[in-house]
Image 1: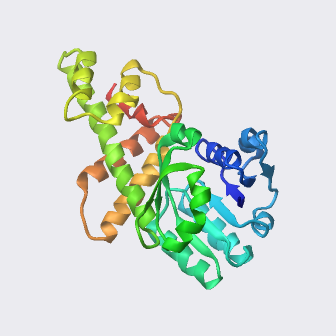
Image 2: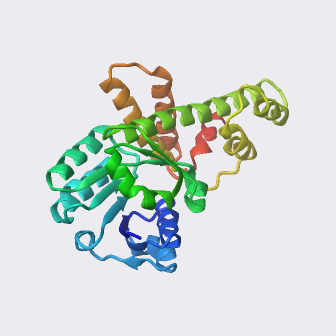
Image 3: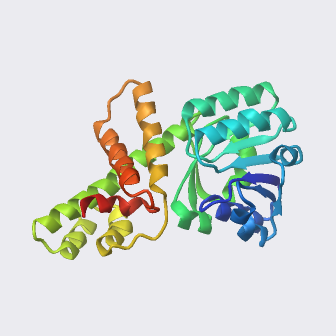
Amino acid sequence: MAKVLFIGTGMMGGPMAANLLRAGHEVVVHSRTRERAEPVLAQGARWADSRPDAAREVECVITMVGGPPDVEQIHLGELVEVARPGTLLVDMTTSSPQLAERIHVVALRRGLRALDAPVTGGPQGAQAGTLTVMVGGDAADLEAARPVLRAMGRNLMHYGRPGNGQRAKLVNQTVGMLNMLSAIEGLFFAKKAGLDTGQILHMLQNGLTESRSLHGLAPLALKGEFPPNFHPAHVVKDLSLAVAEAEAIGIDLPALRTARDRWAELVRRYPQAAAVHEIARLYE
């Protein structure tokens, strides 16, 4: 079993770290505030006052943090300077493919191993240990990390070179958020047309339009129920990364840009929003 430093114990990271403990790994955690880590500390994890000090003592460091600036600071500003040769650096944040490539290059020069391994499955998947993990990096490094990743995810998908795990995640976010937006807009259309939205929802759930959005969050949006889940600001971050990657490879994705702009409008108009499906508020 591995000794792991897990950085970022929020809505996703906390349950993921807890699953590492349940699998028998030794887990040290650090988060912006100790309060965020209390649930996993209560399950047996140890608290690290200093990320660099803790990184010197472990075989694997996992980050599940806010976005590219945090990833860059932690990996390139701290970890590559202090981690022992052979340490696995695994970034599970949704981040920039180009940053993942840079981390891999710098890590290799320092005798370290790096993987980009973002996830999909949401808080429920994080709690159940059934996440899908999209991995970019060397196959040998993935094999070394497999026992750790298996504790958190049911499906490990290797997409090849460094950065490709992030690229796969951005494709996932593109499809997922467009599904959500189309479900909300379609139900708004039905409502304004005077149709029974419950009947329309049943029809959509049982035809070619079926999607998880229609079975999960869209019914909650119809009821005006918005329990916190994936923060709209993170949607904007992810879709902005996807737009930037599309531009970098020379393609135009207008529907993606529209989705990004709609969630950005939600964040501006409803800064207190804490659920992805609160995009429905724009259609009230």
